Image (cartoon, rainbow, N blue to C red; front, side, top):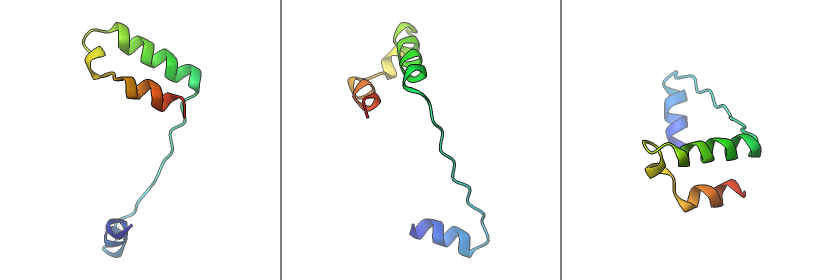
Length: 53
């Protein structure tokens, strides 16, 4: 909050966006990442746990 206040006080416009990805799409992307050896190393058990939220 303080950082955002500093930015707005100096004339910076802040735009906040929320990207919603459905559970089905998220699962599809995680499974694709698991299969891609160049990306699989980035995937962790925590990614699957976070998906449950």
